[in-house]
Amino acid sequence: MRIPRPFQQLLRPFEGAARSVAFHAVGALIQCGALFALAVPWLDGGPTRASSCLLALAGMIAVVGAASPLLTGAQRKRFRARLGVEIPAPAAAGGVKRWLRSESAWRQVRYHLVFGPLIAAGGVCVLLLWATSLVAATVYVWVWAVPPEYRVAEVGYVVQGAYLTAAGLAGLYGSAWLSGALARLDTRAALKRLGPSRAEQLERRVEEVTEARAGVVDAADAERRRIERDLHDGAQQRLVSLAVNLGLAKVTMPDLPDDARKVIDDAHREAKEAIAELQDLVRGLHPAVLEDRGLDAALSGLAERAPLPVRVKVDLASRPAPAVEAVAYFVVSEALANVVKHAQASRADVTVERFGGILLVVVSDDGVGGADPSGGTGLAGLAKRVASVDGTFSFSSPVGGPTVVTVELPCAL
Image 1 (tube, rainbow, N blue to C red):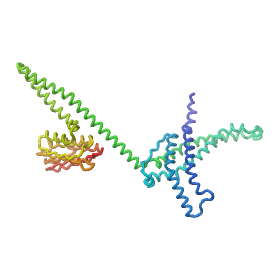
Image 2 (image 1 turned 60 degrees about the vertical axis):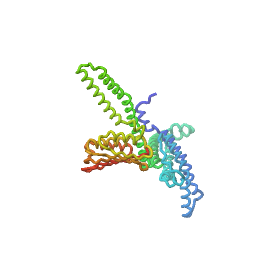
Image 3 (image 1 turned 135 degrees about the vertical axis):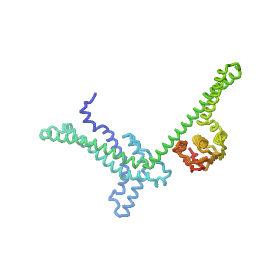
């Protein structure tokens, strides 16, 4: 049955009212234990001396502090079950002493000592207002439960009932609003004091972002390896086969016209150049020797292919993570490419060493210097590539040289 729109507008303030009422009722029950612990020292007149009062207050705080983990767990379940609000647990302190010294422990104790009881008392008042308003709004139903002679004697009960009904309806609307407002207030207080602090939330967010970024870096590296394998095993092999067939055609068909021989010669040369370019592209994506034999062999291969003398020194007791290894290789590759294109150098030096959890990569040359990151020399791209694994990138290139590129990469990823 569909409710008419005017009635929908009238009933809108009561949406979720049942959940709020159940939420406050459960909260009052949970706080009963804490309230009882707080009230015990003051029963039978309570302490009279100042020292006794201080001792009683210390005992109250100690009891609530000891019960704080249980009370906090119950509150989290209440928020999750009644409002669908998840309150994350703060970082584990590890041990009772460290928990007592932690900020999160005292935030929880403050909630259970101050905010929880006050909000629970407000919840009880709201529940009483609900009950009173409901009784008043249904007074015409209750009035028929009294003896008939009372209704005859009290001839003005109809007018009084109308006033009570109007007051009850207004009380129901006020109760619905107060229930929602108190639930929102309790939610803000609980999230701030029972959950992680702002600093802990930021720390967790940084960890999540770091893990996500590491996953993206690993996925990109895996995709580069896949493309390298596809090019090496697919397109490169086809080009090699084409070059071989063209070479065989030149040898086995000596009687071809000069024009046809020239076309075959040009095609053979273009195929070999395409193979060379594809090999350079494959090595730029992810060289197989890096994955198979590590940085030492891969950087030695770069040095051998360079058109100028390159001294390579690699001192690694163990191989770093694949993502870090790939970044180190591409840093050296791009830096040497810059040396060849722009530095006018006669030699270059590459040093890769590990100091604790840091992989230090240094590329230097004796060129003319004056490198500018905004000049399109690839230095800005190198800095971004290094930053993708939380590394640091720096370079020095005064006019007249030398140019030194220094990269520090964290090995524990």
